[in-house]
Each structure stands twice: as structure tokens, then as C-alpha cells.
Amino acid sequence: MTEREEEPASEDDPGSYVRVARFASEQLAGAAYSQAQRLIFESPCDLSVYRMQFRRSWHVAVLGLQPPEDVDYRLETILAIGEAASLPDEVLKVLWERGARMRRRGPWTEHHLRPGGLF
Image (cartoon, rainbow, N blue to C red; front, top):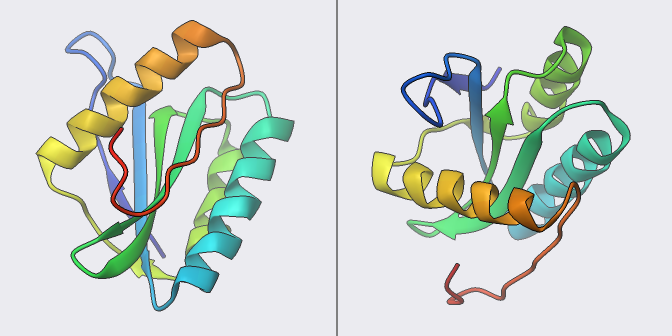
């Protein structure tokens, strides 16, 4: 089971959604990231998925608007490969801001950075 955190994108947006999981290896995080990315691409939802190394552990975070129940369930199943985790508010804020910037570019945007790269 993954930890669910409510972090509204704005004060007026109670439907915001955050799920974060920590993984034992880069490969497991990569597999979960790829599955979550594919699900988000194929589903009617407004979510972003991120894979990152934070405090020497690999994490996958999914942020956006509350998805349909079936998508939420599938994301929970995908992230259950890892363990429930949380990220500091300042990290989540950067991810929310990045997601907003990417949505302004178009409905589907991909951008990959190697470890040590900046958003």
C-alpha cells in the first residue's frame, strides 16, 4: 500500500493527488515508473509521474488531479512494488511547479534528466 498525501495545487483545488513510493533499486523504480507512465498516457487523467533519487533511495511520485477510481487502484498496485514514502514539502512544491510548466507545453510531455540534473 502506498501513502496518500493531499497537497493541493492551489488553495481552491481540493482534488489534488499525490502518491509516493520508495524502491530498493533503480531498476525496480524504473519498472514502476514505466508502468505508471504508460497507465497515465492511456487513461483519461491529469497526472504527472516522476522517478528520482532522493536521500540515496529511488522514489516514484505521482502528482496531479484525483484520477478515476480504477486508475487510482492501478497506480496503487504499481507503486506497491516499493514501500510507502513521503517527500518534503519543498520537493513536492518543485514537482507541482514542474507539472504545471509541462502542462502549459501540451497534454503530453516527457523530459528526462540524468542524476544530478536540475528541473
